[in-house]
Amino acid sequence: MGKRIKKENLKRLFDDISKEYKVIAPVKRGEDYVLEEVKDFSEVALDYPTTILPAKKFILPYKEPIFALDGGEFKELIPDEKIAFFALHMCDANAIGRLDLVFWNDPYYQARREKMLIVGISCKPIETCFCKSTGANVLTNACDLFLKADGENYIGFSMTEKGRKFLSQLYFGPETVDVREVKIDYDEKMHLDIYTIGRRILEDYNNPVWEQTAKRCLACTNCTLVCPLCYCFDVIDETFIVPNEGQRVRCWDSCLLLSFARVAGGHNFRKDLKARYRNIYTHKFKTFVDEFGVPSCVGCGRCITFCPADIDMRETLSKLGGA
Ligand code: SF4
Ligand code: SF4
Image (cartoon, rainbow, N blue to C red; front, top):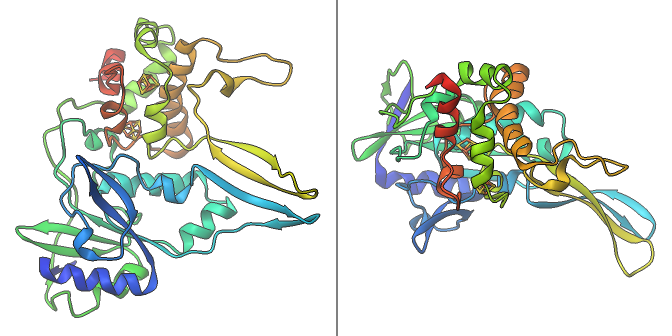
């Protein structure tokens, strides 16, 4: 059941959320859109193609101190902030839902996640989107509240108690709207049978596609940095010049880097780029599916948009024979 809200009343919803949360929303910067803290509703881009970086930059910051050594005393640094994402696309909200499966017992992630509000909004899929193939085009309880476009206005759906609190406010109309399923439906440029392809990755381990694509790949890691579901991290101890002071940080890493699979003694399990490149796909479409039942890809298309070598993940996947 949904409730209608007029476009001009979204400001009231935003202001209400701002009273309780630090609000992160899409904002236009030059030709691009970014997620950043927004204090004034007029800055929010409601109709945007995609943001450069996903919500991951706030949920799993690229460099996060996890504990500090302060004068010889260890202090755990558990985050304590209430973040609300406003106007996230369905794929990006569902990416957070899939991160939840991985970080369910991570105290730093959970501290942020438990206090978080996610307000999703309808999108207009662009050429690089393939969320239907990855099953990320359907509303799930990753969103607390979802705003489905309805002509010039919206219909709000609440999926959690946090969302219901806002949906019960007077800026939403009193009448209810019966909608069986809320999803983003469109003609994908290339529909992929992701689960069949995932199985074929290991069955057809030496498919020439890995060699061919690795020859073009620059190992720049752009694709993993912009991916809402690439969450690998490294842990580094930093010592300061002052005695007995320092911190342990975790920071983004990428399995495309040569150092990623290097272990003590210098052995490297994935020395060549072909193996590292194939590993991304094996993890996203086979082993993650085996463990959690969904791929660690929501088809947001960022890795396609930001690849300087014009490598299109959909083409690589289709060459494995499941298109
Ligand atoms: S692999 Fe590419 S399309 Fe899939 S979620 Fe990551 S960036 Fe988006
Ligand atoms: S963005 Fe493209 S070139 Fe860079 S590592 Fe990813 S696939 Fe390779």
